Length: 138
Ligand SMILES: [Zn+2]
Image (cartoon, rainbow, N blue to C red; front, top):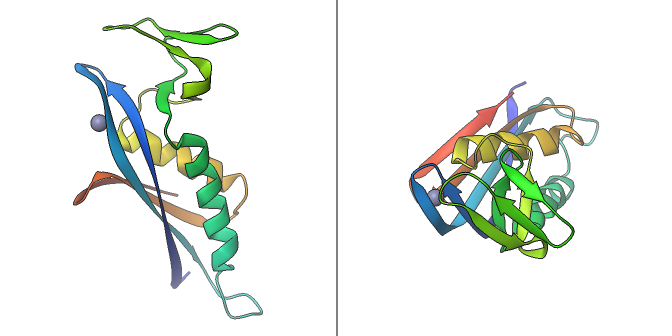
């Protein structure tokens, strides 16, 4: 699979990690898709890939990213039970099936979502700030 095409997306969001209170980042994501060329001499259409990445970024945009673990959901709010403990209106959060919202776990989550649609080797690199990123490739 000698070719790789890449697209980028970004989303501002807030998260909290063990020992770190809630704070925000302008997360940026770079997605690479690996493969050979199809009959149109491309790995896949750039706009199809960009649309898939943007759709996921839009779901996370301006949300508080919450791991489903330790979250207690009700109709209108979500309570985070581990320290320091928060209650958010449900409309402001994105509840994700991850252990934590580290860059590593978020990269893997976005990878999982893209794999549902793209049956190729994919690399997702997620950055919290310029020069620091975590990637998940499979
Ligand atoms: Zn952070």
